[in-house]
Amino acid sequence: MINVAVLGACGRMGSLIVENITNSTDMQLAAAFDINNFGRDAGEFAHVGNLGVKISDVKDLESVLKESKANVLIDFTAAGATIVNAPVAARAGVNLIIGTTGLTAEQRAVIDEAIQEGQVSAVISPNYSVGVNVFFKIIREAARYLADYDIEIIEAHHNQKKDAPSGTALRAADIISEALGGKEYVYGREGIAPRGKEIGIHGVRAGDITGDHTVLFAGNSERIEIKHMAHSRQIFAKGAVLAAEWVCRQEPGIYSMNDVLGL
Image (tube, rainbow, N blue to C red; front, side, top):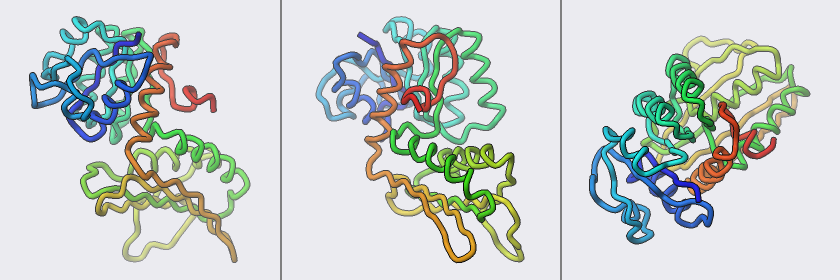
């Protein structure tokens, strides 16, 4: 049985992850953390009944991880929290699933170094949806044949999302750029802004949109649009739990959802 710990267990993603853990026959919730609701049962927020796992203060992360004998920690919080908590978990010998977006290159370097020094396994991905990772594979292939087309990426999310553009949109841009030997990115346009050979990236924040991503390849007299639409956060939670089960069987190192899915 895999012992799983969850950061941000009272939040929208955290509670969904807890729910999915309870539905698994191969893992169990061993620890749950948040910045409030200390002492309350984690199952309350996931609407799965009493689990016997109390919400712990994230300040006690290292000690609780050790006491609970957690094998893996799932983190879908915020960049400022992940940069503090991921190294703590790695030092404690706990594997990691990181879905936090908005990490800077410097923050990611610190996390990568901690994972390597701790000799743990980690999956780090901006998106844990199976469909999105197939979407990534499709746009990589399309870019090879549409290199001369104008390329625009449009992403839309709910009005509470803090970082922009989304990590998924940036990953899509990186995939296309890599396929084409390097491209400049332009984030939105205003004023006099003649188009060059760049990849345009645009973010929409409105209502309760879970997550839409469109890659537009536009040529003369035609265009191709490749789109992924998330209807529920459940797809991200299921993917994270799948990755948590997978990562515990791997050698120390840093992996992606491509590795988890065999893509």
